[in-house]
Each structure stands twice: as structure tokens, then as C-alpha cells.
Image: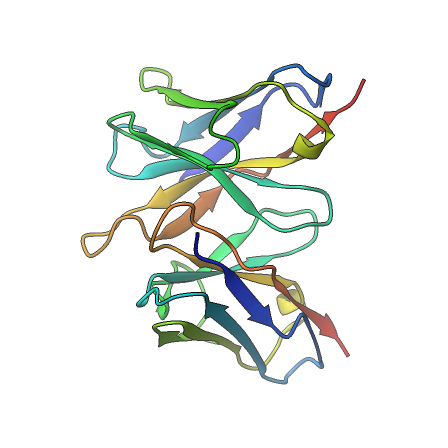
Length: 107
Length: 123
């Protein structure tokens, strides 16, 4: 199985700042990577698929990059609703494992 | 807009069977996407447990394969999960989700989710 690690585990930032989240796969997954946001008590929401494509309705403050085994999610100009947990997920092979998550919290 | 909604018991006894139904609207289970079950133990991360496509091809988590059955009823546009011999370790919020396909790649990711239902395994 492909294992994903995410760093940092927690990111403390203020509204208006930029968040940079990392995801590393245990082997190359090309660009088969998705990013999700999960707010407390809610289902995850797809943000990015295929490493860099924004899902429908996702603002351009969210961007994804990377290929191979190293990926980044960048959130510009953090807004109040952005403070949540972010998960990456590999979509190369089943099971489509998720990373452990990065919590973006208010500083 | 695709909407998914689960239904089923919120409490199951140890060694019993966990059964959930996911009703889908706004898309057909006969479409070219995959339909997935995901679970999240309280305070923990996300786990894909199994999925099915329009041809009723299924894939299951290796750790659950011996206890898990996923099926669908196209006429009712419903997706089903059955997990047998449950233990406290199966306590989780269970989600159903659409794993969508594009012309470039299939599948791409989970673009529509149910709200999730907490299933507790306890006597």
C-alpha cells in the first residue's frame, strides 16, 4: 500500500496569511493526488484533484502543485472558514489512502 | 447537484452486522463513476473501505475484505454497505461518496459526499 505523510501536523497562522502544506508519498504517484478540507462535524470537501486541478466551486486562493512523491497545497490570504483539517489522498492504486492530515489553526 | 444520504442503525452490537444504505440523487449509479464508502473513527483520520462501479465491480480494503460486502440497486439508485462480525474498532462515522471520473482519468477523487452517520458498536 502507498503511505502518505503530511507536514506539519499543525500550522498556526493568522487570517490573511499564506498556508503551505506538504504531502509526501512512499513511492511515486505521478500526479494522482487529491486534497480535501474537513471542517469539524462536516464531511470532507474536495479541493484539488490530479495534483493541481481545482474542483468545482473552489476559489483560486487554493492551489496545488507537485508530482512524483512530493506535493504542496497552498492557501493564500487565509479566511476564517479555511481553519480546518486538510488531507491529501493518493489516487494511483487502491486502497486510495489518505494522509494523517494537517490542522490549520488560528494563531 | 449530486446528493448522497445514508440511512441505517446508529448502534450495532458486537459480533453483529453493520448495514447502511446510501441514497443518491442528481446522478445515476449507472453513470461512469465509482461509488465509495469511507469511514472515520472519532477524532481520527479517513479510511477508504470499499467501492463499486456501474458494472458492479467491487474493490475492498484488504483489512476488511473478509467481512465486507458493497452492492447497489440501480433501479432505486441506492448503494449498500454490509460489514459483519463488528467490534468496537468498527465504531466510526461512515460516509458514502462519489469517486468521479473525467475523460482524462478515472477515478480522480471524491467530489460529492454524504453528511456521514455515526455507527457505534456497543452492547
